[in-house]
Length: 336
Ligand SMILES: Cc1cc2nc3c(=O)[nH]c(=O)nc-3n(C[C@H](O)[C@H](O)[C@H](O)COP(=O)(O)O)c2cc1C
Image (cartoon, rainbow, N blue to C red; front, side):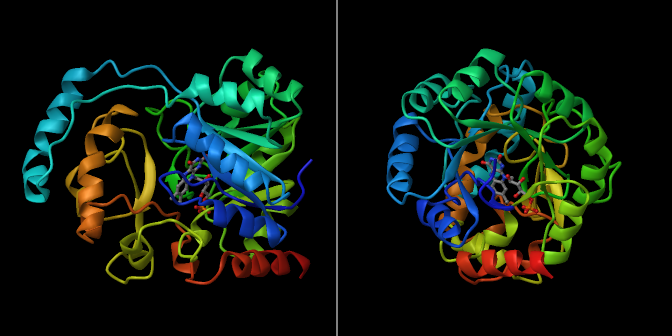
């Protein structure tokens, strides 16, 4: 089903460039475009460009959830960010909801099918999954725990990414308010726990830093792994330079989960903004939009303390080397 045991994770926010996706494909991995936060037209332009390479690839979509019901808490949080907004000279918008152009993205993917679609933050109606499959697309759910795997299988997906809590970026957990599942120490253990319940192929993701981690995940029963953080510092990655630099900087000794930037739990290098907003409310994507000007201004100012520095626990293994070299190291490790 998959052309490679190595998938380069879709990374929204400009990280998964077309260059990263094609370079991974040329190096015998499977690259994924990240459609999250993009318009359907921008997604389509990227698909057209990557398709021209004749390499297999996938597209990742954020599945929209319901609008937040705690509008007062979201407004109060926005107001509490006022002094920082003043510091950066930006105005923060009111919390707002949107469905990330879901309908038009699905329309585009039905009109111009791609080999793989992965879904994050839940599942759409079964009819959408079936329609994509009818066009020849392999549909993959992202899950973090057993009940989600069972729901995904019931929805008829072709495969499931098992995302462990060590993964960088947003947790794919269906219910953003649910606490992180810490029952498995790593993704190999989580995969081994879930394999007896799996009726579809599993892909292991989270905290994988080298050949031995990947061998363990495959030995536990995964058919492939999905790796994100190790690609963040590559020249092909569109991560902003202060983010790339912070990943190699001793001033950031750990990662942590936070919802301070987006209202949804996500793992990143722990910085001042995260420490100062440990009790940020839930509310995705409303808070993502509220903090967007702050994050942009901090990035422009080269201030990593107020940026979202998404990273998995294995970030120390991320090196400033080419994406093909990262693939080569990981795939070579599989043979040993
Ligand atoms: C910067 C960044 C952005 C991410 N964006 C997405 C995304 O758009 N969609 C998605 O399904 N997963 C996203 N992820 C999570 C990855 O798919 C994957 O689960 C994770 O990178 C695996 O763990 P690792 O980072 O430890 O390798 C992102 C991860 C990072 C680090």
